[in-house]
Image (cartoon, rainbow over all chains, first blue to last red; front, side):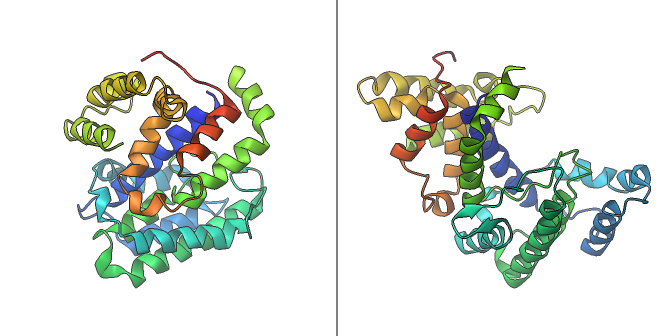
Length: 178
Length: 96
């Protein structure tokens, strides 16, 4: 897969995730339950299989999509600002973004999630009804079998991905040929 | 872009998306036809034509275009920057 295709797929997936988070169906688990499960996923000694079982119904319900146009520009703007706050240094992308091995990435992601949750609470009447719960579910990246935490694909995130791909292009092209 | 977005919305409304299906032309048939038509229409205009010749990229652009009030403020969201991205990485395809 070449870099441009990768960016294209990332944009498509980003909007799909926002659609899933817009799902207006009441989630099977409460935000508190989800937060507790997310914390346990970060605990190395936790029983991951048992945690996954707890999330089965959420997984099914998450497949439904809501109206992506329910996202107000101000809300996405503030979510994007959370990304900038935790993953950017001025105009530059931190080199450990999307790096599965780097603990700074995971720590920044936890702070980012708390920031996004704060934005969703601040704009409670202006975001999709269960956005907090669906975002909390989405943010359990280990459950979704992602190799590393994946912030929501707001505009700076897409730009950051493009910058990183440009930086690491030779390596990416090499891997894509294999 | 409006025509592409309209066709994409029609495809999305038909719920043809299947996670196991990779081919854009199968998942988004009306959109794919509209992109091919645009590529033909912009034969002389290198910028737009280049975008239309990378199906997954133009699909991504139209997807984020559904919430364009957020993305259209991004520095990279201009035809020139986008064409530069493709120019930098290559990967133009004429196959649909």
